[in-house]
Picture 1: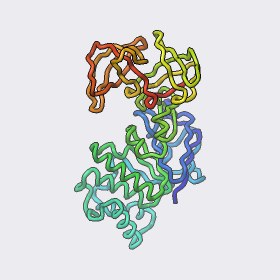
Picture 2: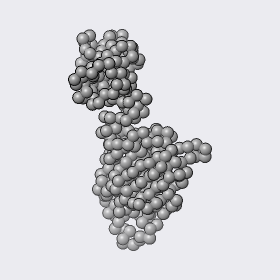
Picture 3: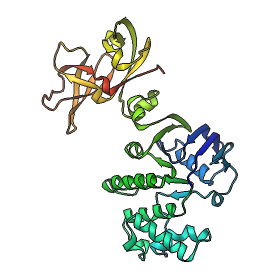
Picture 4: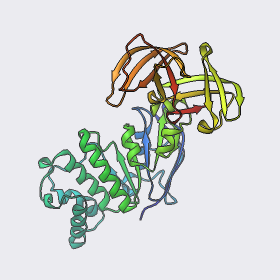
Length: 353
């Protein structure tokens, strides 16, 4: 039966190095939460603490109200799916999937029926007698997933499970993982460094940095309304422009950036705009216009890159270096003068750092 996971004020060290600092996280029953971040941010350490491979310096971990903090890994009944599959090479697909059941004292017809049903669910029934060495990477990952699910764990944990697969297979497998997780309703923690993977598979995502959760929210909120500059950069806001409000009039706020550049921003589209703020813009959030009358940031265009859907320009402005996209229908040359016009849907307002 699936259960909620509670991590309260966890701190962890590797020797004298602090890896996690006062980290707390609540995951509801049946929810899939991804831990997302660069190498060394603490996401895998968090997984290892929950799984029981490491002990925290302080704090508690509980599953369904039961304190796991000092329990050994084998006492926690958690399903694990690893990056390297961790299959037994001398056992058949069916025996690999049934290994956890055997360890729990389930054998005979009961074991065979559960293994057969799970192999059918992951599309591996015809391969039940094969050894892992005769399987593709995607098939091995399905075996690992089936082995984790067949024990019906209250919590399922994934540690970079798709890193060894090619790009198309990663997309296919993340859809399968999500469908199986939803069908089972298993509470899940998914560790990855891949933003697209995390956003596509998760109910919520925790973006981590230096042992802390910088923001925990739905993929939609993270993408559109990052909480701070770190998260903004992480989710693709290349341009961070410090500004101050110089006038407020009705639904329009006039703000000034370095070099005296002024922009009229719609409060209706941007929401509450404080007196001092950072305008965070993706490259799509600064539209390159050759119209000298356009209201935007004056820029000298530099390197132009073809993206397929747009041209991307490296731009020099009085604010500093900015990255902006322009239409395919009107390619501009390096050295041309242009205006960079904010596009509200691809911009966000942040508090100053």
